[in-house]
Length: 222
Image (tube, rainbow, N blue to C red; front, side):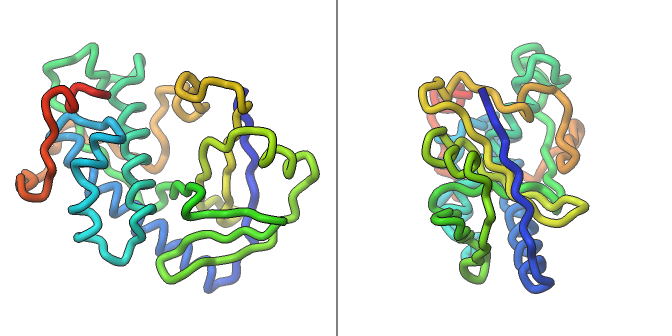
């Protein structure tokens, strides 16, 4: 069973600005990836990584390599929701000949972290930003502290809420088959509020030199 622990961050004005800059940059990364999904019909995370990682690192040199990987994960995850959910009007299985829509990530899109970009030890949180690590002291309940040791941490998501920035930690039991687990955000066909789907907009063609083009077998992996 999935469990979400939401932790508000008590940020100063300077820290809020740094997190906003990171969120904006992350959305830019996602929007650079979206045309690749539309044009190659590939949103498998591993294949999308092979297609785009090198070009993204060159295009966005100020963004850390692991955060590029997290943006690839975000786009793959969102594309799966839009293009594979059985109730989605853009479901590719139901409309195999239909052109893919272009996904647009708004500036308030969430930022995904992993163990390389965020760490938590003895209540001390350290997280990546564009200009160095940012640290917070988290006062977790004993039961929540136990979760970090006994359950599998599946996702870490930073969002900007009306109350300020918060982190969401998604857990599942260690013995659960994670590949079969579906997070609540994926269980509904409802589009996230930070996403716009543009069915009639075609992104400019991406030069072949910017892509490590996959084989047809890789393209078919979704």
